[in-house]
Structure formats: C-alpha cells, structure tokens
Image 1: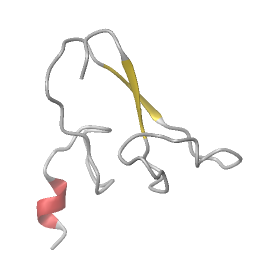
Image 2: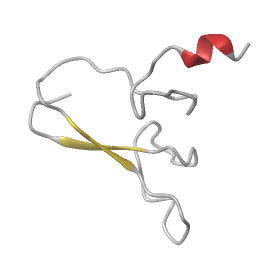
Image 3: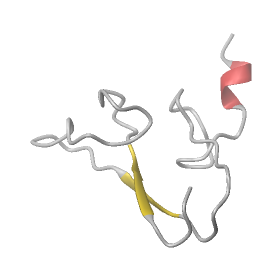
Image 4: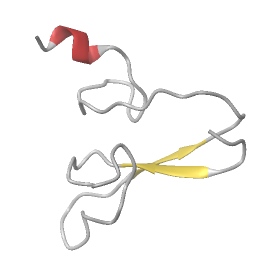
Length: 65
C-alpha cells in the first residue's frame, strides 16, 4: 500500500476486483470499508470476510476448515 492513499475494501463479496470495491454494492445496503494507508508497506486484506479486524486479515480463515 502507498502511504497517504485510501483504499476501499469490499466486505459485500461480489466485487470482481476482490478484495477491493468495484462498486458492485451500489443500490444495496452494503458500503465498502475505507482503509487509509498511513505508511507504505505490505498489508494483508481479508478475503474470507470473517476477520474480526475489519479489512485486515486476522487469520480467521484458518478456523473455517
């Protein structure tokens, strides 16, 4: 991620550009979660949508098997 940029994480799950929002939620009740990169660094976004840490992966996917 690039410092100072905002990213929008899709928790709706229908975005074609997972894990980022592509606007597929429009017209529904879902809204993307804004993530502000405070520093340039690698970030692991949640793809399973089960993280208790919002947009960031907390390893919850390991418990779903």
